Image (cartoon, rainbow over all chains, first blue to last red; front, side, top):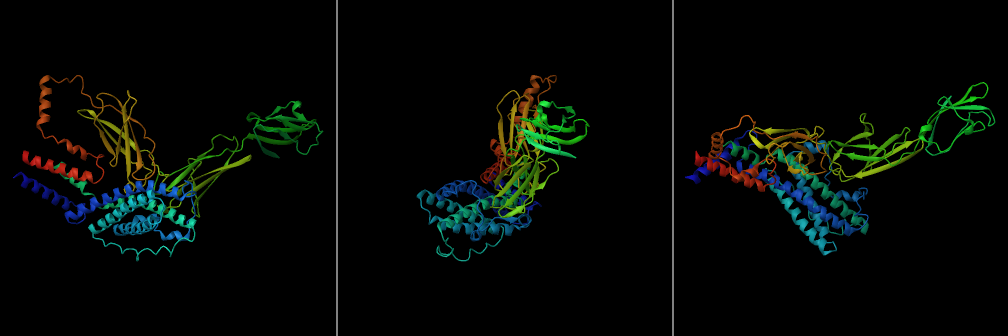
Length: 222
Length: 335
């Protein structure tokens, strides 16, 4: 019957795909899962980067000068080191294993999300609260997406940040200006991480080729 | 002994004849030509409101003995205006280069000094032999949140000036244009042109830092360009060319995620394939060719979505899947 033949072709394509020498030895559904998830995660980082531009603009204006000045280029204070940095030595970055690469992204966004949520509880205007809430939801989606990729590739998820973030009193900035500096650096690190992730996921895309490329070849050759 | 002196355009210059007394009898020459006494104040030579043409060698001779008492080379010029500095990364992630020039000439020699600061660290910008007025820096770290500040100071004998630029690592990324752009007609296809190109050779790592491309084309006879953005691949087939018209085609490149578009590539010209006038087909042959192409299997229109350059994002995966299955299913039924 036509339906039976179609299914036969489908399984044939799937088997042919999984036996192509270029692919690592993973079973068919996992291969499709990882390839698609990486592409989705990549797309999500681009979407978030775009969202962040608007959010950061609004937030920096809320902080007021000098934070909203384009030339503002403050020195990095020691206290700002709590926020995970995307900065990395070039050769080190190149040599990261897929697991390490994904884990770095997962850890970074999990912590950034925590800090953003703290911020969310403190901002003044309703518009900002709304934007921040929306962004946090998207960022949560990114963390889950990265987790999904790691699982589909068989990597363990990194342990969450040690306990909940310290209560607001602990590492709170001693004055209003330093608090604003903390916020400034948080947004800057977030922006840089999103740029970096696009590159991280590009590299991962090459390592785990998306199923669509090989499937197209099969369909045309048929 | 010989001297050199630099003076500003429009300045008043007084030249003394070495150690000679003010009231000594002397003759001054400019580039070997005697200077009229009206320009002298005693033994001093007075040049008012000097201009560029007055640059040259000035010599002072004792009146009677014609001994050379003093010689100087006068160079008329200007202090430097604020220089123009541009920094760009065409080889991301290797590093970036900065190049500079003066908006107006000074007519005298200038020295350029460039300094690069990254946060608290001083970096060395290595000067290039060619072209001059350019230096390059290698990135030590990638994905930096701290801006780079580049300061250029220009100094000459008449003054100094400077300019500075501050930028993020990502903001200055701009690849060179694509290379080896080739456009060819497609045999038996009067509306197609096949365009191919290569990544710019200065882009060191297209695997990890893929480029996307922008193609523009128009027939020479029209002013309006058509544009196609391509997220991967280094070739594209134009399928809506006007038959028989010569086209001009250019390509630009950009890092997939950061920075700005390159300049347009060198333009290439191509004309789509046209049927040879002397091989006119008869009516019978025309109908034969038409019916032959409709009876052979034609891919349903949806597979066009799977063409290179149109597929972006996972939504397209599902479409390709479906199209692939449809093709597979139909071909089995038709065997």
